[in-house]
Image (cartoon, rainbow over all chains, first blue to last red; front, side):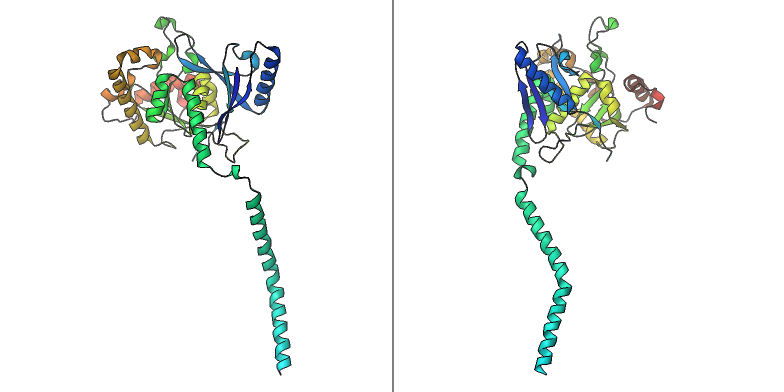
Length: 84
Length: 258
């Protein structure tokens, strides 16, 4: 599993990468996950429905991330844009 | 006489220097400060078109890996994405539709432009409903700007919309159409989208079939029923769309445009 973060001027960066079946690597993934959430980021997991349609799922804790997920993408939380 | 003139000249110079000295010292300090700032400023804080271009390429690759092939083709060719309304709810199936996803019955959709508000519209008629102004500012400003690359902004909106439409719409600032996105541009984009879908279906009918829920003949309907491209909503459009939005916004349809 890879934890990615969108970054201005860079595109995505890899925050952490590991196998959730390996306890030590899972711990590192959880720590990185918490750090990003504490920094105010939203976390989304790209998924695919049984009908092969792609969508995303917002997760609020590492426990909500499907074990088979390949990526979790962090992005800044939404804010109402200002009117012109 | 000469001595008096010389003394007077010296006094004049000294007095003038005393008058000019504060201004001169201030100017000198400012110049030194600007010079030191220029020397100490990190080159990574400035705008670098090459860096932004590389960031956008990375963002496009990420976007492509996350969305449907058909949606990617729309974005690549037309520069925007379309997301059906009620997307976040269509994991449920509807008994009345014999198990087909709710998206088949979507009465509204969104256009996602990079760094522009979401534009909601009625696919059947092309009537524009609202603009939802939403941004994803990265307050850490790693390179001096809080703006994500264009394709990352589109992906963030797509993920938020498909995952939790209610939440995103609740966080957005709602405006009537035309506040930030030119309705004429949206009208042209909807026609371009309809044409794009017709051409794609004509090129490869099986591709349209394979797209399943993503494929929607309503784009063609829009072009065939509205050749002039008029997107001005009539009363029935507005009422139907408002009813759909009342559910999303958790508000009465009557108050939506207050």
